[in-house]
Image 1 (tube, rainbow, N blue to C red):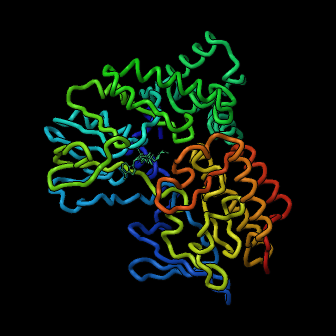
Image 2 (cartoon, rainbow, N blue to C red):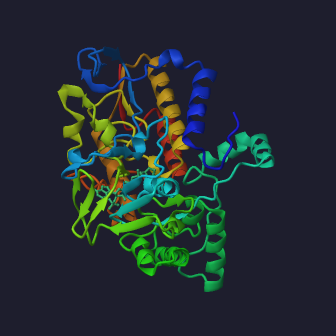
Image 3 (cartoon, rainbow, N blue to C red):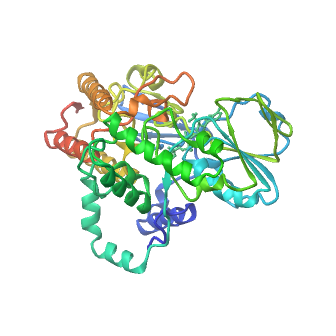
Length: 461
Ligand code: NA7
């Protein structure tokens, strides 16, 4: 298969998933349209019983949860929502047949990555688009383009080496990080660096402009000022530009968004931006959205309000480990795991890109691959030695949880009320969820643990 664009679109990603399923003969092992509701570990025979919403049951010695970091979407709960007489859409559940918004008045609620990518396209179709923004986000140009034949040929020729390089980088992406301290470089050199990275496009290029963008507040402020300057340059109306300038979090501590013409969209006659910090939504009416200031009539509402990230999909399943203890209880004060992979009290339960692993702060594919290979090797190790279960020890887990928090605290991430810390879900404990020690460091640690015979795990015959 040959990728067509720098940023693959949904149909191309689906083609790829189908290609992989066919090429590796995986279809026989997949049951689609099935929701798992419970998984219970039996202390007697050390097996998991997995139950689906249709009452089907499966028994298995190992349970690998690959349920995704951003797969449980938040549900809108605005007063009056059910009275709305128009159409409702959610970015993460977009109808596969597409939606024609031509000539319609559309509201978009949310301005995270999903909205920022959808808004320019919706604005082209809609008669009028009203965007409801609670928090302004930083965004950089994607500079999406078809991949040239020559580039594809060169990449494919050196593909194994490219993949291998990605596996041993901080973010799982072979980009060249700047070595300097961002706050210390002179103005001419700073501009040259940032202009080049802005022109190149993509979040990785911007976040690696200097080695300390995510750890040094002064360096981060400088990059943030640069990005705000770009916004003011692109957006014609100064009031709208100010509303679009993020001012409550260091750049990158909420996902740095990537867009195609996002800021310029606000120069269109048919687009209005509503700042919810000053004028919050009061209710949804049969004909639109009412804020404390005005009623905005619309025929369709697009919700782009995000996900219960990282722990949501795991806790959505009623998982019960040794002694019937539920994962929801074990994680009531925030997730606790060893390596973001295994949980004390839950033998043979594996969480692919779980909380406490590099996951969402890296190239997800590379992070997933590392976990899957590591778990497969561990299960093979158990089989070869006639062992029945592997379970993280409480001590190893406590050390890992402490380490994840300590490394997180050396960065600026905890300063933002982001989904990385669970702040977007009411009552979710505020815990920095991913591991920001670097994928390469994490991989080495996991390999060392395996080589030493799975230290930190109790292996039982
Ligand atoms: P995000 O990044 O969580 O964005 C959700 C957006 O929706 C964000 O602007 C939120 O504002 C806004 N939001 C959420 N709830 C509300 C309510 N009740 N009222 C108004 N606005 C609201 O989700 P995305 O789907 O865009 O992206 C998720 C990840 O996917 C992204 O980070 C990439 O990694 C890929 P807030 O910031 O909470 O004030």
